[in-house]
Every structure is written in structure tokens, then in C-alpha cells.
Image (cartoon, rainbow, N blue to C red; front, side, top):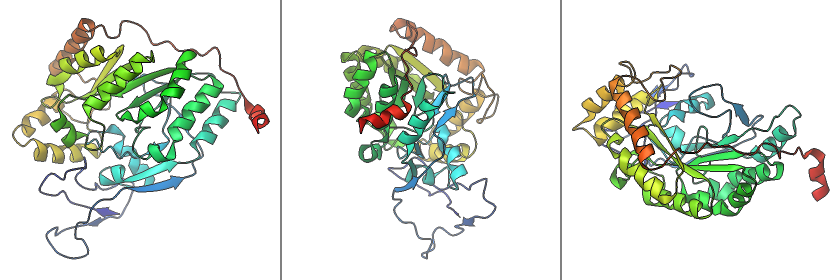
Length: 357
């Protein structure tokens, strides 16, 4: 594996600026002289898709911090390229870098629909909400072609199993027909991740995502169709987007969101080096202060992994964020009702599917 050193200037169109070393690999190749004109010369980083025949799909979530019991990720890696993404480290299990590889080498679980059917037909499966995008975005660009997420939603409808969706991509509106049918049985919730309303910041921090205006349009469109929807104002990064919380929650509420959640950024594993490199290039005037404030939210470290603290942080600054979030949610009428979905109508189809052919 090639370990690239960071460039001196911010590379547009990508969140990560280089390939970090993989902690599972014993040998790496390092570019020692980036100015040399040889076979190490920089070339455009193109996205590559790797088709995979996975053996499992539905993951049991043991963390008490994320609010889900089971997740499904039909894509590993994410072309959206959000520099802060906590999922980057999982790409190392595939032998890739958490840096540029994460957003340019996308593993596609082509047999995901068949695996989901198999899971639902298992007699041990108890109907429970499945979360799409527990790790990477189920509506990232390749979904337009593969339509795996659409097929998973169709299967959830067939089996009457509840499903939740979290995305940064307006492509979710392609599946309004299925989302509407799921909602007729109280089987769906759709969340949109909105970190700010500053487009200049989005282009630096989340370079290949839908615009914030498009994401608010997703909320508005879903709400007009009476499809229950909410937002994740996450992650909040001190000195970068935490000051935008009020306007984000207000805009989301006005667009029709009923619920909101947040997390405080944490830079675990290789993400620390990636984010710090990006931070000092994108915001050199405040980088040192921002880095210190992130550490202040995690007991002096940027990679706190303690259950109960890792997602929301602790300390005075984290407490201030929590207080403001709760205040704004109350002000804008968010989180006033519980999210309860239907698990009573689940049906195990099994071999009855063959009768359709």
C-alpha cells in the first residue's frame, strides 16, 4: 500500500488530502520526495467501484450512543468525502486507507437485497427497525446506478419491517413512491444530515455532497408528503460550525422536520491526522484554537472513545453545546413526539416469494 504524504495546499473536491497508513498492514511504501518528477508523480484521484459478494449484511449495533439496534451498509467507503467521517477507519479492514481510499475506492455489496431477504426469513429475526446508513451514506452517487438502497426499501415494504434512513444526498427523493407506501404502514423515518447553511464551508468540509439548499428541499418535500422526517446537525465542530446551530435548526423546522439530533466531532484513529491536516489548510487563522476546543470536549484528547461521552463530549464547552441544542429544539418545536414505528405487521415471506414467478 502506498502511503502518500499531505500536499501543501488544500486539494479541492476531496475531503481527505492524502492516504493514511493502514494499521493492519505491516508494510507500506512512502513518498519521501513529493517534489520529484518520477513514478510517484501525483495524478488525479478517480473513484473506483469494487463489487463484493458479502456473506452478511445486517449488523447488530452494541454501542449505547448511536440510537439504533441494527444497521445495514450496502456500500463501504463513501464518495461524499466528508473529512470528519467517523466511518473512515472501517475502510482499513478492507485493506485500504482511511484517507483518499475511503472516498475513492467504494466497495459495493451487490448481493445486499438477497442477504436482507435471507435475514428477514430467518426464524430468529424479530421485527426491529433497520437503519440504512449506519456507517456510510446509502444514497451516495453510485446508488443512482446500482439502486441497491431502493431494492432494500422495497424488501422492507414487502416484509413490513420498519426502516430508517440517514443521508446527505437529495437522491433520496427518487424513492418517494416507496417511502410513501412504507409510511402508509408506519414503517419509515427519513433523516437528513445538515451541518451548516454555509455553502463555502460545505465545499471544503463535505465536497461531494448535495447543497444545503437541496437538503432543506428534501425535508420540505418529505414533509409535504407527510413522510416523517428530521435532521442530524452533526457533527458540531467548535469554531467551525457550532455557531450555525440556531439557523440550521430553525430552517429545518420551517422545512417540516419533526426531530433533530447532534453529535460533537471526535477524531478517532486515522481521522485525527486527516482532519488536522485539512484544518490547518482550510482554516489556518483559527486552526490551533479549533483543535484545542475539540480536545477540550473530550477530556484533553481528540479521540475519546468512552461510551456515554464519545458522541456528545464532556466539559464546559460540550455542556454549552447541549444546552443550546435543547433550547433551540424547544424554541422550534423539535423532538416533541417520540418516533414509534410499526413492528406488528411483519410477515416472513420465505418460499412464498417463488409463487410470484
